[in-house]
Every structure is written in C-alpha cells, then in structure tokens.
Image (tube, rainbow over all chains, first blue to last red):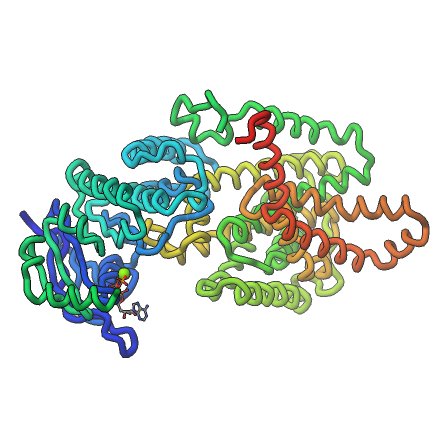
Length: 258
Length: 348
Ligand SMILES: Nc1ncnc2c1ncn2[C@@H]1O[C@H](COP(=O)(O)OP(=O)(O)OP(=O)(O)O)[C@@H](O)[C@H]1O
Ligand SMILES: [Mg+2]
C-alpha cells in the first residue's frame, strides 16, 4: 500500500484564531478515512487547505507524491481531486443533468469559438459526457429528477446531486464534508452504501468529515481526530474509539456541543 | 413530464430541441421574418431591423448578466465602441461591413477587459457602478478623441455593400440584419449548451463550487465579459450601418438601462427571454403612441413633446410590474402556459 495524500505540519491562523495547528496524517490508496472532531475543531479548514481554497500558514499537502500546497483550487479537478461541501453548494437553477455536467468541465475542451460552432470534437465530447452523466445518475438512483432544477429538490437529493457532480470529475480522491448531517436514517444508509461503492467499484480513495459516529465506525478504514485545531488521534476505528484522549475530548466536545 | 416521451439516444440529448412543436414554431417564425418585407411598410421594416440588431446586443448582455450573474451598465459603452469602430474603419479606411462588424465586436471585447479585470472581485451594486463608469469614460473619450471620432459632430457612414450587392435599401439591410441575428443567436445557444455556458451558470449560482469543478473563475468571468461585449459591439457596428450616422448621444447610459430592462422583462438567463424582452420593450413605445393617438389629440401632443419622459415612465412601470407579478419574465409566463397546455386536462 502507498499513501495518496500526505499532510505535513499543516497550520492555519485566521487573524488571531489558530484554527488548525501542526496537523499531519496520510491517507492510504483505496481506503476510507474519516476526519472527526467537535464543532470548530478545524475539520472544514483542513479540507479547504487540501483543496486549495484556503492557503495554509504552515505545512505542506502532497497528492500522489506531488506538492499541491499552493496550487489553485480550479486545478484540483483535473488532478483527480473532487469534493462536496458542508453547506449545500449546488447550482440551484440548473437541472440535475447540467449540475453533473459541470463536474465534467475539466474533461471537456470547448473554447468560445468551438462552442459557438458546436461541431466535430465539441459535439462528440458533449455526447460522451452525456453518456457518463447518465451512468452517474443511474448509480445514484436519481433518474426521476434528472431534468428538474436542483434548487427544487429535497435536501437529501441535493446532497446526492452534489456527490454526483463530484463523481463526474472522475476523481481518484474524494473529499466529503458532512454528507449525512441533516439526513434521516434511510438517507444516511443510502449515502453510506454509495460511499462504499465509490471506494470499491470506482476505486476512489475517500477522506470524509463526519459527525455521525455510526457511519464513521461502520465504513472507515482509518479515523483521524482533531480537537481545537490539533490532531489528537489517528488509527483504525477500534483503536481510536479506545484511545483515552479521544474519549475524553469527545465526551467533552459532545457535552459542549449539546 | 409527459408520459411516453423519452430520448432514444445521447445525440438527441445534445440537440437544441427535441420538440417538433418548437421546430415548427421556429420555422414559422423564420418564414414570417423572411416574408415581412412583402407586407410591411418601410417604417415597420426599419423598426423590425432595429429589433433584430438590438436583440444581438441584448442576447450578449444576457450572457454576462442573466447567465453569469455579473450586472453591467457598461453595455452602452460596448455598443458605442462597436459603432465607432465600424464607422471609423468604413469612413477612413474603406473597410467593408463584415470585417467592420467583426472588428467592432473584437475591439469591444478587448476593451471589456479594462472593466472586467478591476471588476473580478466586485458584485452587485459595486459592479454596476464600475461598469457605469466605463460607459461614461467611453462617451467622454469619444467626445475628446475628435481627430478619430469627429467629436460631437458625429460620423456619417457610406452605404454598405456586400460582395457587390448594395445594402443601401431598407429591404436588403433588413435581410442582412436578419441573417446576422440568426447567426448570433445560434452561436449564443451553442455556447449555452457547451461547457462554457454551464460554467457561467455555475459561477452565478455558486462560485466556490464552480472553482472546485475546475472552472478558473478569473478566466471565465473575463470570458463572459469579452463574449458579451463582442455581441454588443457587433450590434453597435450593425446599428451604425443601419442609421448611417452616429453621434455620442445615441450611447447614453439610458441605453444600458433599457437593455437591462429588456432582459429582466424577458426573463434573466434565457436567450428566448432576451429576444422576447427586446421585442416587447421595442414595441411598447409604438403601442403607447398608438394608444395615445386613439385617445385624443391632447395626449398625442404630450407624447411628442415629452417622448423621452413618457417612455422612461412606461419602462419603469413595466419593470416594476414584471418584478412584482412574474419575476421569471415573459419566458416564465410562456413556460407556465406550456406546462398547463401539455398537461391538460391533468393538473400535474
Ligand atoms: N474564513 C474564516 N475566517 C475566520 N475564522 C474562521 C474561518 N473559517 C473557519 N474559522 C474558524 O476556524 C475554526 C475552525 O473552523 P472549521 O469550520 O474548520 O471547523 P469544523 O471542524 O469544520 O467545525 P464544524 O463541525 O462546525 O463544521 C473555528 O473557530 C472557525 O470559527
Ligand atoms: Mg465543518
């Protein structure tokens, strides 16, 4: 096994707030890694730094052994790195199909001139993209809403579209920020099944931020725990859940959050 | 969704439309446009030509403001740049009409970067003000660069001709404008169904997510500005050839506002909406003039002496009504009607 993502000494200060401090961990190829921690622990900030949306104050991020620390967010898709967001981030006025097609952006080549003519290569690529989108729609079981504007769908379905859009990138690595928060039991189980299928069938490595301990313990191969911006635990779900520091932080964190 | 209506192939999915009805309507509309010179008076024909040319510019504005969500009051400036480019090229360098139109569009696109680059971080009101300043700078420059633009005297254009065919007549120029309009609208529709149109929509709806999908925000916002300015610049060039005399007064800020009104009334983000809005707002003054005539002579006098004020008033009322009653514009009205029609007699 070899690591696909290496985070070394990552830190971020927002003004006086040290949101993340000296966080290092690696994610092995073909695994599901969960990033957990109480509210405000810095999980989203870590994902933002990995995906190039927030420049880190210290540390390095390597993806497939290449340093991507200061590379811009829009390069990530073509590198094979997809993500979803904690708060809904769909293109609300576009249809499900068009949302997922946006995920294929980096795989298409149209420029204004060739797009205006819409012939030959642009047209063929577009037909291929549609075919791929239909596969994703079938995979996520959202056929019956494919032509609706995403903004009109339920929260759970919008999240599913966001996942589909990230899959359209054809990622080798997927960052998921709290996919199941706000979902009911059934929707949560669907998502867990999708994430497992994504790992096993599509061969994608997953790093997910999650508050739902059920799904974390069920499907993760590795769990990384943050508290107040620092890493306090890293290991298999069983190791982590027996770690006294994690237990203490988690009980305390859960108490604070409640 | 209609029962028994599904796509047979991926090719059909990328087609502009799969509906026989839409194809039939489009064909009828085109035939109607082709036949117009046989039935219309020369006044109506000139009005129709103006609408065709305006539609090109308004479809361009819609790409930037409706589709990409970047508001612009700079389009009067782009229109002026296109018009003056074509005029100067024609008068001083005897450049023919088609290269003139292309150069007008290209120069507008190039200068759009001047306002696009400082606007990258701006949204809403701030963007409106910056683009407004652009229009003002353009009109001032036109007045002051009189060695090039003849300043306040304006410029008279020679009649255009196309490969030996004179476009001096109203009918020939109408057909030329119709062809141009069809070409530009087809190009805009193609852009909309490509990754570029989808990227514009993505930037409008959620720019950070768009970035994660591989869309370079800087490049695509500038592209939206340039593409939009190209359309409007080309429309300016055509307009210059239509009226054959241009003056800086034709490109006041009010023109930008009228164009915005057209896309709002038609329905933001939709090409068909932009066209409908252009037609509706262009016919509105004609319709009111007719109404005033019918109502009596006192009112007619008001209309002729206070035409601009009356027009502004009517525009204002129409925009407020649309925003209040039908925020999706005329195209939204059309979609509702279509839904009712295709589902009848079922409610869902
Ligand atoms: N853009 C920002 N500017 C200033 N402070 C920020 C910013 N983003 C995050 N923070 C702060 O950084 C800390 C970590 O935030 P982050 O969103 O990473 O936490 P999280 O672990 O994802 O929390 P949650 O579980 O609530 O999503 C918080 O104290 C937050 O207020
Ligand atoms: Mg978070």
